[in-house]
Length: 182
Image (cartoon, rainbow, N blue to C red; front, side):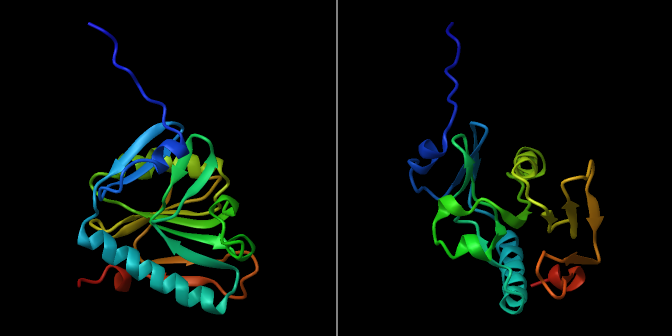
């Protein structure tokens, strides 16, 4: 009985995978596959994109984007965060390869993404120097807030506050409104 062949995925290999409705990412060569998300996931992503977009329209420190990105910090990493903010200087290049210093990343949990979002990707985001990472649990109605120096996350169920460098006022998100039923 032979040993199974393990594939170490690169960003280029992931980019070459078929468009079949799944989301493909790689972190340190591990292939992460997520099926199409549930509607609740997409509703929360849309709400967060809207709120951050309104804030960043006034505070021109960055641009918020959604999951069909192509963020790669190394040959064996390609991620597509659900929601992320790119600094204004980098986003103006309109070049994925220049999006290296993300100001904020938020992942909305799905049953298939819990391990990757809470552990694998969190560790990679930390190593890339992302200053703030939100793990949004829409079912439990709270957000894990990770900062670079945190050994464990803070858990927020009332509000999120973010004050990016260069902004005159903080972003505030009321979580009871954010998690409101459809």
